[in-house]
Length: 512
Image (cartoon, rainbow, N blue to C red; front, side, top):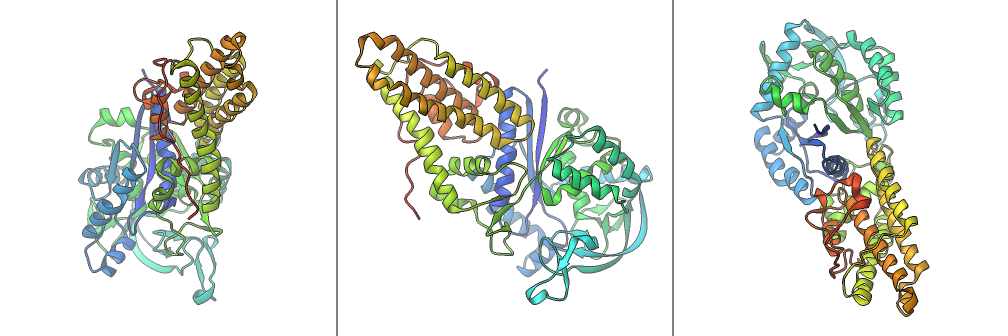
């Protein structure tokens, strides 16, 4: 029976169009899903949109439309097209306005209420509409500019609002010890380590019960037992991970797909690693496999943000460098889990050095030499042992890196092959061997080694670069789709034994 791998992005808040910060998360999650599919795992990737809450309501009113019309327009014109643009192979797309989500939320909430985990109470707290989150004093920082003298949200740099309401509460405080026990028993549940430490410290300081409803506006899912309230947008949004796979409706599908691994930005790791597992414990379902909180994309030293005019739309990059280069750059240049700075200069440098001159030039030179010296037929001999060992080791290390969510390390192993093969060409000088009748067997081994190595690199890079690797795979004699190759056996692939000439995989890009 194949291993199960269910992986999710967060559902993205659709108050505006997506930028490359969202794309970074989507591509990373997609790479993990594609890798697991190539392992033969029973893989399921979920993404979607978060469409309720006060911020959506205010945004729609500001644009003189209804919240439903606003979210419909953005989902169809921006969020779904971005998935297509970036070759995201998600298996499902959930919207919190979908009826299936509403059904799942009501079932889940009613079960918690019936089990005594929800009560009615009053409270007053500081609330950031931008985050749709209540803030503690530690979450606020002194404002600057027009907000000087005020405390503002550390993420949105805007003042918070004091909210006084009588709402329904989830008994989050009663799960403090269970959560601490979870973090200790499963050190890899929250990753990377610095996010785990932050989450654990937050819980260790004590938890307060969570307000999970609102009665001052109606854009949301009605509380089942009190329709004068709608469910708090974050509490409801977290439930997309189970409503999309049949919670309370299709138990067979739910059992097949749950639990899941959540790939989220570090700024929402607390929701996923504190509130969400407590909700799962209260409902009596198995706790998620992993929560991985990756870093932020920084532009000019600041987190990617439309509000701060640092948001860059993916198409601004893909129109110049192509989709594969976009996916490669963000997965390669940033250690997954750490913050990373984007710059056009770094993207341009890596594109030309690693893709055009590294992988692309290696492929074109190798194919040209096989055509010139062997009429396009790959010699049927074993690769040079030293390089064959490198291929096997790189495949093993890349696969192990994926289990640690270290996508950049997996790519490093693939590019290690490319770098070694380029060095191998220089060392062996096939053009010199071709002139010596006594070196023909050696030349056969060199050419076979190069083709074998390129095919191996193509398989390892297939989850990252979906288009160029297929062209490369076919060019070196690979059969079928490269995405269908067993990735753990990448070093031992076999093909047609012929190479085909292809146009440059990564054409030079003139400075913009």
